Structures are given as structure tokens and as C-alpha cells.
Length: 288
Image (tube, rainbow, N blue to C red; front, side, top):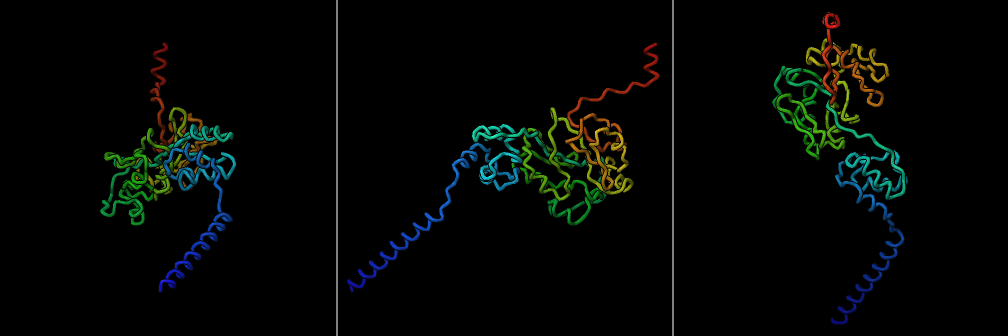
């Protein structure tokens, strides 16, 4: 009996040793040696894991950088140019200057501009409400105001303003990760260049309905009149599906389109107040 037990133990031990040897050689054969630079790059990244870079977290972004062999078309929206420059300096590569971006709400449909016609009483989710109806104001493209974007923001950079019913973006806290852009079912949040001293001009509307119908639901909607397109001398404004769009890469921030818009659908951010226009009669009297 004792001999049988000892024989079984010896046999199992021999099988275990043989399996260990086999596993060792298999591991050596198929082992992947990770580039140590990946850890270096990962340590330089902010660790937000927001996905704003287009990759599944900072570690995956670091791996992609090393695999690509350059920083072309690579950008960390949270760290911005300083982080990318530090990575470039550590790797001995070149990093292009990337203009700071920020999330922009392209909807002016506040409670005052787009009064409610119905009362929604359902799940507090924009995704859910979007599948059910046009919205409290009747605009099929306007903000639903239920805060999916606020929930998606990891940086507490958004909140719903109770007075307007619209999301407000905290410019100091926004890191341009793009999470709010992805989650919005109405596609009213857009990433745009932050602009010099935060100055930006954009059409604060995404409604593609025809003018009369659009205005029926919101007093500051774009009616597709095309006046802004004709006024712009830099071909920065295009018209498609009854909706004007300003290309921030071409816009020179001259603000002429803002004055031309008959519905105040074009928003200007962080500009000095305009000087009041002096009437001709008053000017002549002063000169005399």
C-alpha cells in the first residue's frame, strides 16, 4: 500500500516537472518583450483614461505612439501641447503645435427662445427622450436638456442651467475629451478651437428645417437665409440643408456675419462689447 502511494506521488511529481519544463520553453518561445519606452510615455500622460485621444485609455495611447514611431496625428486633449512636447523631448521626436480645443454647445433653444409646448414626463435620459419625441419646444434638433452630456463628463465641466434649461460648459474645467460630443443624440455639442483669448464665432443652431417652421419653434434658429454666406469674404461659411456652418479653420473672427444674421443665430464669445452705431444726423450735428 505504501509503495503504491509513493509510486503515485513520484508519477505525479514527474508529470508536474515535465509540464513545468514544457510551459517554460513555450513561454520563452512566445514571450513578447515590451518596449520600455511605453512605460515612460505612459508615465508622462495624465492618466485620465478618457478616450479623447481616440484610444482605449492612456496605456493603449502610449503603445500606439511607440508603434507609430512618430507623434503625427497624435494628441492628448487633456494634457495638450505641454504633455505632447514632454513626450517628444523624452523620445527625441518632434511634436507639432496643437491648437487648444473646447466643447461648444450649438443650440440657443433656451426656455425663453424656445418655449415649451409639451411637458415630458419620462426617463431622465436624452437618448431615451430623443427616440420618443421632438422635444418640449417642438424642435427636432434642439437640446433636450436632460443632462446625458453632464453625466458623461469625468471632469465636472458641465452642468444644466435651471434658468435656460441648457448645458453650460465650464471653460476652465473642459479638457476637450469629447465624451459629451459622443453621448449627445442630437449632435449639438461640437469640438472647436478655443480661439485666441477664448474668442469664438459659431452658428448656435443645428436645426435643418426650413425657415418658417424652424422659427415657429425657436426665435434664434438659423433660417437658412444665406446672408452670412454672402457677407463672409473668407469662404468660412457654408450653407447645407437650410443650415449655415462656420469653419473655425477659415474664420478670421471679423464678426461681420454676426451683425448680418437676422435671427441672432450666430454667437460671438469673449469679444468686447460693440460700440453703439452713431446715426448720421447726430454725427453731422456734432461736426458742425
